[in-house]
Amino acid sequence: MPALKLRQIVKSFDGFRALDGVDLAVQAGTVHAIIGENGAGKTTLMNILYGLYQPDEGMIEFQEKPVTIPSPRGASDLGIGMIHQHFMLVDTLTVVENIVLGLRGQGMSLNLREHEKRIAEMSARFGFNIDPRAEIWRLPMGMRQRVEILKVLYREADLIILDEPTSILTPLEIEGFLENVKSLRDAGKTILFITHKLDEVFAASDRISVMRRGKVLNTTDAKDTDARRIACAMVGHDRILTVERMPHRAGKPVLVGRGLHARDNRGLEALRGVSVSVREGEIHGIIGVDGNGQAELAEVLTGMRSATGGLVEIDGRDITADDPETRRRSSRLAFVPEDRHTTGLVLEYPLWKNAILRDFGTARFSRAGVVDRRRAVEATSEWISAYDVRTQSPYQKARFLSGGNQQKLIFAREIESEPRVLIVMQPCKGLDVGAIEAVHRTILEQRERGGAILYISTELDHVLAVCDRISVMCGGVVTGTLEAHEATAETIGVLMGGTMSKASAC
Image (cartoon, rainbow, N blue to C red):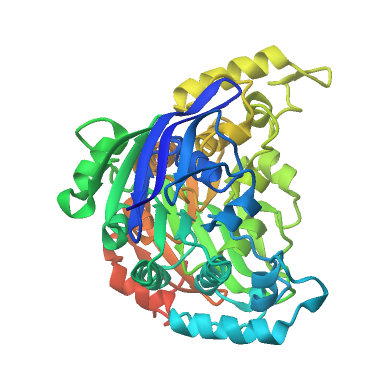
């Protein structure tokens, strides 16, 4: 029996048709994967199912009844839960406090001890092993993911939507998560699994639907297809592009960090004597489990966080005391941040305003202190074409772009500033195969121009694909640095676990 039927769902934003007559049937008690390029309409469709958006046209049937889903509260009342790509947890609260937050029927009768008991029993039943009294900020990302699942289960959801659920998990955490998904299915839950990672689709899914340009192209049983056919359906042609990496021709050191120390937002030591260098025409990768100092390293190098020790140099000049703007202007440093929504873009701004954010005060985009709108729009239009940013116009708000197209716009802005040093943090997070290839091609082109690129990621396969040297971080230190030809998943895995290499100098 279908748990969910969608008929001719249409949704538009500012004249852009994000969903164009979507038809979909999801069988009860299955894991149904929705896969497609960034901008295909996957997240928009899920936001309609969760009541965050209302469809312009079409009908939704849930458990064989026509329904209207006016809000997330309405979705929860129907038995629909959603786990977002960015967790919706309050870090300063405990597990039980997060789970009961907003729960109906509590009022003055809230009994946390009773909820703790029930949550502990549910956690044990699904093999989650979560302490209900643990504070969220103390939990690793994989455990926080489980808390999000428990929060949905505690509200007795029958249909669970997972939107890019593994984008911030380590390989080991992903393996455990996929087992959790299958255990939910075996318990009778229906799972909608939104992802761009084909290996995860085939590891956990029963059925697969491919979306492209706001439509569902086809739906098939996972056992009746393979990764190549699905990938080709996603991108619309019968071959998958690959990015060619030319031989390494590194020159002199450009960006150098020596003995860097820094504290995180909680006042704990995040960097403990980190040294790193990036040379002309080189992509130097930094890899490690999320939360081992990589973010703090990027912030120290870009001037967004003060170092408590050590120094930073570009072309032999000490820039440790320089603020971020001075580093951008005088040292030609560009930065693609991890969080494109809060650090990379102003979502309510149109694309042309976002495109000139870093350089709006320069002669290129202003005259006598006033922004030259015509020149800014012309430049943005050129970048949209050159970087294949799929949008209606330079006047469209950034929030209506897909994640991949938002990332392309940020890369255009930073690359077009002609940087000497480019630092990229998790550049392919949440992107589909086509967008990943576009990002990697852009980075490699910058390398061929002689740029010095620091590539920080938790995605091991991406680092191995494009980097010339790879440094591994664990516990705020560099545990080893390898040339690309020396690096394997096994050797890097050992270093990620904290074992120090004898040759760990950067």
